[in-house]
Image (cartoon, rainbow over all chains, first blue to last red; front, side, top):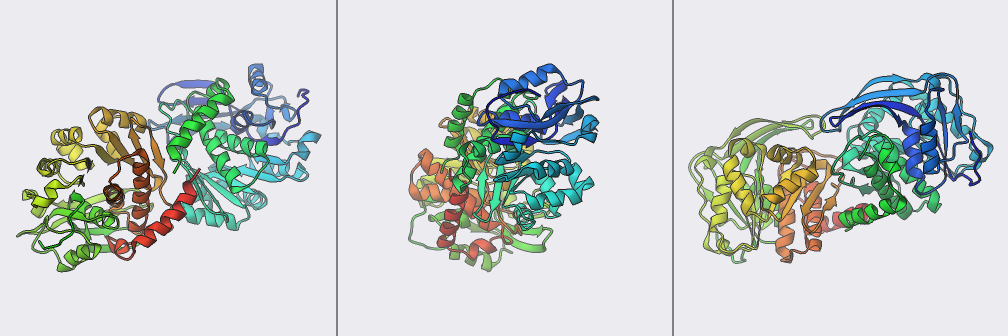
Length: 306
Length: 306
């Protein structure tokens, strides 16, 4: 979609959406959202992320400008005829429970991503939440990825289980929220949930528990990170994608996959997500700099250090 | 009730109960329970705890013997005519939701605790969950406590708010679970909940979040500790009391009230609670030694260290 010089170190595919969101605080229409938006914005504080997604003819130029400001590479963003993917949902009082009111796939229904040549040499790949078939299609185009992470959601667990299981068998890390992890595995306890997923292939599983933090399971042991306690949650949409984007951006920037690097990436992802929920859509992430993330990171480390 | 030599360093008052518990795993009748049982048993791994409670004529000698084995001082345990306090409850599939089926106060209806003379000089006091009026009565008998913690429950928030508020204004630490903290303060977000409680007087508030860990709020900052991920929860009853007992036992043993000491006590409480839920009643705590707690503590620290 445009020319830039710096090579991407992280490729992200996912949904690009215009969201209509009702929280107990407010209702907002056509908010820039989708998994790829949050993940790329979050990652962009740490590394050059390349976005693979599709926008409809109605996608606002201000959205594209927003991504440019974050420093996201947009060579993999395709603009096509038709309407942009739309999601609409409402949050209950405690912000932990949300109901999807509508999902319109629109241009994502026929999306067949073709990656720019330089993206295919990327070492780090994040397959953010989108149909597993699309995630597989992107994965197949990356020559020799060092580290591939994937996220998913209940919709695909219910409607696209076969491609999802194929995907899970091919990734290094599955990121998934707690309720979806239970649905996927049919197990209740998260330790057993994670053991099941690890048996399917991934080296790592991160179970995202929203305001209760995250857990990373692997053969090297368990890592527990609480959530940063946000005083005033305005819009939880994209928290998990921001966590994942911050996590992957941090890993891609360091280039290391040690247990210490993974742990640090979880802390970074937690902090980025804590900013994301403080305003609607990408508004809060757009208003902060890396120094803000670092400062909250120091504060957060004081809370959790032992 | 009996003679011992070693002075108590922690006095605990609370309910002594025979519980009937149904979990998805099993149902058990007349299980040794109540807040004072779990708290004293948990504390006894670290210090000499003195139990202030009342048992009915039907209280089994095996229960008394159990406490002796833990090393709990029983000078403050009164045995009287009538039936022991009984609680009955059922846990839902995920063990996070429980319903109280019945509560029979029995001998606790007329309990008026009189503390042994040496208990009155104790520096550490834990007012485990029981009617706030009883907690206040015990507190008034301690000459110069260095550190007083109190726990409570939804029943007292609803039926004994005045004495509860008086109690809260007099303690150093309020321990309370997340849903009860919200009910007590009428606020949703835990940061705001805690700020409200701190305004009422306590220097510290610990919000217990069950399988999601605990948060300690104070002017010195926030401490976040995740829960230890127990693979096979058999009976969550007493988890919070075991956490509190381990916490207070650890503090009383060290005699320190620094931020580091408080943080360590939270980790210890977390580990003790993780054992408690692995079997019904006190069964699991009765089967472990201090070395088991220390070993799991090392394992847990690896999971949460940053």
